[in-house]
Amino acid sequence: MNILTNWIGRYLDAPLKNYEAVATSSPEVLASILQPGDVLLVEGDRRISVAIKYLTQSTWSHAAIYVGNVNNETGDDPCVLIEAELKEGVVISPLSKYKNLHTRICRPQSLTDEDRKILVTYLVDRIGHQYDMKNIIDLARYLLPTPPVPVYWRRRMIALGSGDPTRAICSTLIAEAFHTICYPILPKIELTVTQPNEFAEEEIMHIRHHSLFTPRDFDISPFFEIVKPSVINKFNYKEVNWGEA
Image: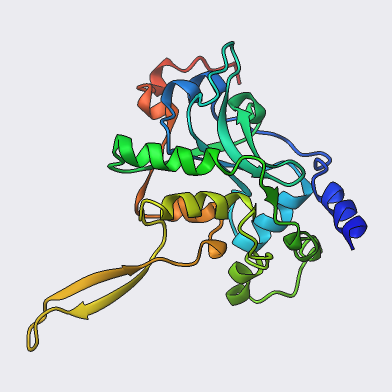
């Protein structure tokens, strides 16, 4: 079984043929804007990306989290992202890894220095943990052109892992980290009447299980700000140097 799983893993991790990368921000620009705790979504260029995009009905197939230069590397390309990769497991990576891919920054709001410290410590402690390979065969099924999976079940298909705490996929690792500081991503919201015979209601949030989170959830979450580097850098369309028609 391990031989089959490893073979499927290698197959899914292979780059897509004829994939046209569209890089929206350079590593240098990202480095000037990212803050510890920011989630970096990636439109992947590998076969596994096709399955995840189908299941989540989203552009985003991978998520990493910016932690800063925690290993005190020097040089032009320090490792500043922590992510769960298919072959390597939980690793720390440089921004240049995604220099040719479409990315998006999702920023949690009102984090304190203590919150960021807890997040980074949690993630660093999990470097070396393995990718949850029990998802591999399930993901491989959805590389068919029109997989017969009802929309209702697609989210749960991504949560078919082993449940082993030493194994993770990219979005569950990040969701678990935010749960340690009770930061909401897409919680279940329950409305309760606060006073009898009145219309006053109170929202009570319930944390969803981390295995149900996907990269798309950080994009659509009302509690994460979408940060666009060109807007922050005061983009002015009048200064664009267009080529001749």
